[in-house]
Image (cartoon, rainbow, N blue to C red; front, side):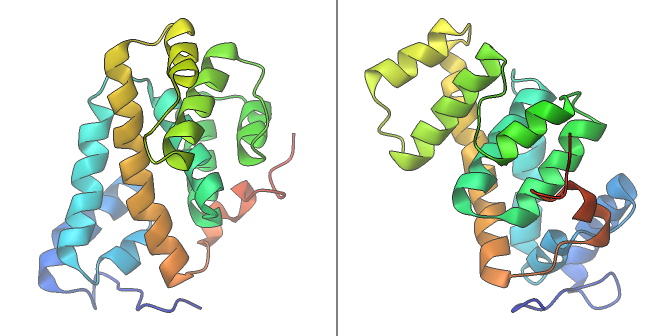
Length: 186
């Protein structure tokens, strides 16, 4: 049971309605994250706008989803781990074994992805004060210096979502239940 109201297209403030309609058009339903953010239309707008901006960067969809799963796992947001696991498998082309590894903070077996996970974790844990060696390992994996800030952008988006879900404690939508950590199997 959510500690914050779950808005719908019928109950949300008028300013949130265009954003809710966009989410439903894109995913076929309104995830509880969107239903909570709709309580504050500018929060819902921020979520969608930052997500669109994040999508225009140079990191692939798979890499952006790796950042989201990693951040959600560190932040303890099972809702976002589940949602981004679903996206990773359905749209981003990640392998099931890679997604399960990400859910459990284990190595994926892909050196480039693992370098991205390591930098994402370092950015979160150190609050951006990443050690020289951690940054160099990311660059040595073939990432460009400009992509470091794309990782920070992804972490900022994840933080909005993860903290909102952790605060609201909303249920994970039925559409995402099969992708929960421990439920998703190899």
